[in-house]
Image 1 (cartoon, rainbow, N blue to C red):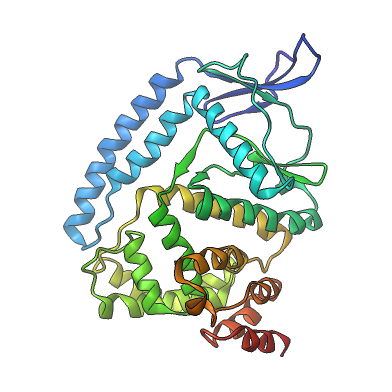
Image 2 (cartoon, rainbow, N blue to C red):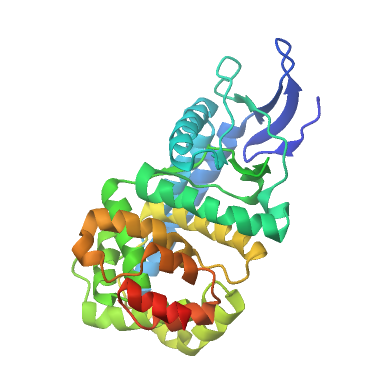
Length: 359
């Protein structure tokens, strides 16, 4: 068809048939002059980011570097202009996820013979968006999506940073992932720290979680534990009580928001450059999941996969008192209040957790 069937971030997508075999392909064509427009916009945004960084540091102790955050996002945006790079990303994800997801997640094949720096030709996928499917389909495939993205975070070292609803499709009961222009690289130290932070949050090990925040570069090594940990613990406890219910979470946070607003300017928080992309992707995935399950909670859903990684990091002896995978999977099916009742017990044995769930 000469008319585009969809709009991509920096181009348009067409549906064509190949003459040699009659197969249908998706052809993404970059808009003319896009490189000049993107670079000019990034130049202006960087000037603004420098001003914001200077102003914020004059009135607070926060160490967030707005220029570094912008540069991380900008490098990903510039990389999106190179469709040959996107094709390589897609090949990598196709190979890696085929091994890990075993037919539950599919990545379309790239036609390298027809692709160029500004034109990307891939296998056409007929299927609805995951967000447009019935709640039953969403509930069935969201755990697959969570496992897929947690595997990227904790094992692959490369993360699809743009899983908006248009990039998650369903075909023949299988989750299809498309559009690999924006990806984030994660080093092994960060992957290990993300896994342990999820474990320590679920097990309410606040002292260890504070160390994780330092390892993840949210806090500097010289951060004052006695000053920072109490308000952080309070916020996370309220968040665990609220689960993924945004309205309930907002109501719980209201009680401590005044204190947190005051402390924010006194705490030396930072945001790692790569984490800005990860946070956006996880928020989109959680938003889709909430359509099928209003009680969905990303931390509880990710816990079983994080626990497997944590055992490799901490050893069996140090993880024996944590929630078992089976118990965590059972807890993910409870309401937020029921999960909070289980979580309040803190670190416990798998037998104790099972009893709590059964009770």
